[in-house]
Amino acid sequence: MTDLHLDTHVLVWLYAGEHSRFPERLRERLAVDQLRFSPMARLELTYLHEIGRIGAPADRIIDELQRSIGLVEDRTAFDAVIRAAETQTWTRDPFDRIIAAQSLVAFASLATKDERVQQGLGQYAVWD
Image (cartoon, rainbow, N blue to C red; front, side, top):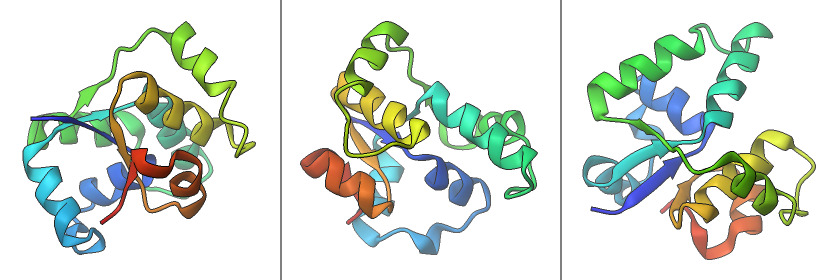
């Protein structure tokens, strides 16, 4: 079993049961890999809820996914994540920058449909 980090929109879609949004090979990985998320994704979920872009608060989404699919919060040291985020100059979005860096420092791929993140992470981003 390998670790697969999940971008924020992947967490939202899993919570909503929108599995058809994922390509077949990614659905297979979602069923067998150890699924992890960055604490920054939790903060982004909170932000999205605060501005009305998603209906459920972060804790409800995370708690449900931890219970239903065994989602685990990645505990990589924050200082190491920030040092890696400093090198992710392909984006100015602090959420993307830290979520991407966290997956890199944890030696994991990041499941993301975001093309900018895919380009920035190259082989470490997955969506097929």
